[in-house]
Image (cartoon, rainbow, N blue to C red; front, side, top):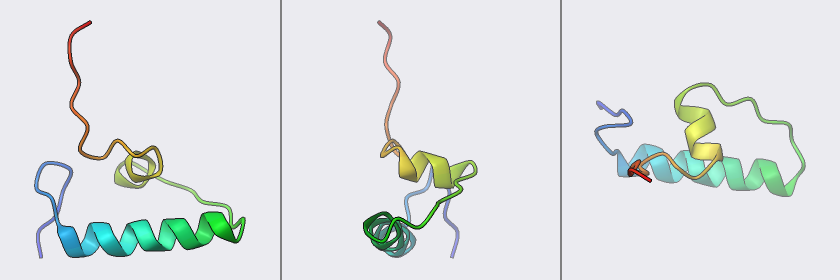
Length: 51
């Protein structure tokens, strides 16, 4: 399975979002690196636009 920030991967995204949701509900500390921090900030597939 090839997944990245450029190539969406529904199964991986769904699993990671569910794990994140459960961790937040239980006040479990989370360390996100690269893709993980993007997922935590809800901007994993966000596009930047010019201001």
